[in-house]
Image 1: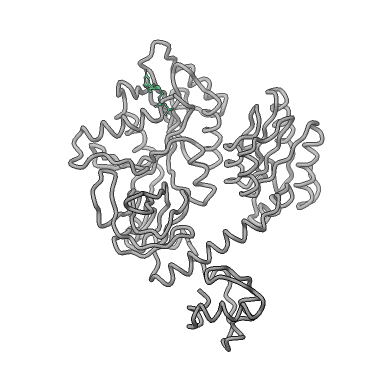
Image 2: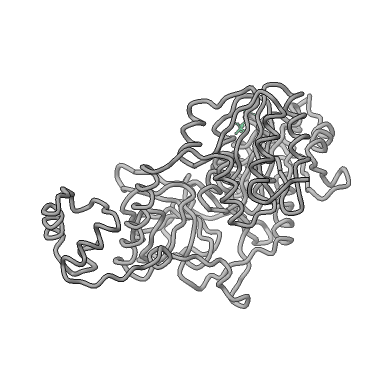
Amino acid sequence: ELAIRMAERGADLVKALFKMGMPVTVNQSIDQDTAELLVTEFGHNIKRVSESDVDIQTDHDVDAPETLKPRPPVVTIMGHVDHGKTSLLDAIRGANVVSGEAGGITQHIGAYQVTLPSKDKITFLDTPGHEAFTEMRARGANVTDIVILVVAADDGLRPQTIEAINHTKAAGVPMIVAINKIDKSGANPQKVREELLQHEIVVEEMGGEVQDVEVSALKKTNLDKLLEAISLQAEILELKANPDRAAEGAVVEAKLDKGRGPLATVLVQRGTLKVGDIFVAGPISGKVRAMIDDHGRQVKEAGPSFPVEVLGLSGVPSAGDTLTVVENEARAREVAAYRQGVIDRKRTTSAPASFDTMFSALKEKQAVEFPLVIKGDVQGSVEAIVNAVNKISNEDIRARVLHAGVGGITESDVILAGASGAPIIGFNVRANAKAREIAERQGVAMQYYDVIYDLTDAVKSAMAGKIGPLI
Ligand code: GDP
């Protein structure tokens, strides 16, 4: 990259570095001082560019209001295991195909779109669950406009239902409750509504604002009502995007296909993605060779909220990476290489995060809330801790418990904490190996306590240390 910039041969740079006592390969990253020395050595002038000059700056407000056109909502389904997320996704998709969407076989690309009788469209993400949702958010991709919370009417609220509620709340995404399995003899939808109240979700039936629909994914009952509820919610949200610009989207799924090479399913968020477009997706560059929709049909263009499988990547990006169309291949390569460098550096220099470092990051963002995730060994102590922590506040900032639960610290807790910049507090519980590994990678602080007073004291001092005394 540096050689290209100086219009020199890569091999000559490698040779010069060898002479300077640095045996490197042509693809290796070198530090800034070495790069500067090398540039001077070759008789070129150094111009320091800031990070913002290299990477792409996305300004989400850049599109003028008059360029914005309505776009379909993007929906994620969440809920406890076995409550019917997959069945519901399949039922909605199946019903729609029968109702006359012409041609093509269904193709599982990670997202699909349905068309309502009113001709309105809805995009569903095919990977249900709050882990995928929050992991995407952690990577900066807020693709979901509406969450469908599935609760089985014969089972009620379960631990993952509550996690899903908390993950949705932390993201600030509106929710629709689908009370599923109403065909079963033990179904008790009213009990579900009452249980939801305990988590501050007041559904319409109970005089609140959250829409609730009784469905049966198995018998395909009331699917139309659920779709109508989504349409209504989408109308309230007034979702819009500018379709007439270079495309930007989110990778929702990516894999290496034996025959076709790296594939990524991209949900276009603004602009229109076209065959031939040159892009970067995270640290991967590419050129759109072909695009395939959820019916297995080749498409030439994909506009906002439209999911397509993209062929023509140089590698496999991660779900949640942003895809951005750029002007030419040199630019795509430059940005991709820069981002890969950032990832490599992070890998070697990551230090364990602490309350204080996480708090400083919040301070920089001028946050008014100090988010926390709390896990404890018994319900009683979790409640006591939540109460105590909620009381810690002053004029500038207050503690906000995103999620509290009984049991060890899991992957899901860490992903939620990471996406929200929150530390995790373990009270008489520890994190499992997988959770520890992710926390280290994402810089999530975890602190363990066995005395409630010590715990509140630590939260207080983390907050007070930066903003003065607490009330
Ligand atoms: P997921 O884990 O949330 O994706 O749940 P699945 O969609 O795999 O469903 C779990 C089980 O519940 C399966 O055996 C489904 O057939 C069954 N199921 C899903 N929806 C319904 C429903 O509306 N009625 C009944 N009776 N069973 C259902």
